[in-house]
Length: 95
Image (cartoon, rainbow, N blue to C red):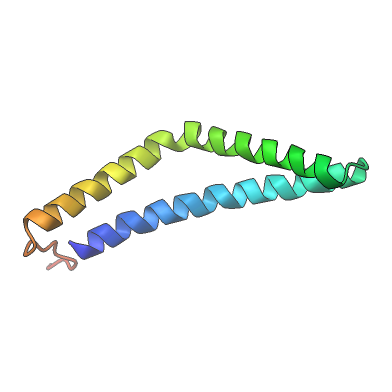
């Protein structure tokens, strides 16, 4: 059961990592544009914070179903593991 739980956790972490990487690329590009436009200091920070919040909200709206599904699968696997600790999912195929 542990490999299945680890697999779902890895999927969740990779999805979060991908979302954060995209947000980082957008933030770096926007920061570069703001510097070129002469916007520095607190105004730049405020703009970047607002954009980051909007990007996080957009990511949750776009990927909310995927996150929900993965978390549901994870919770089901954890419950099965608690109820049947000896349950084992075969990891090799016998041909």
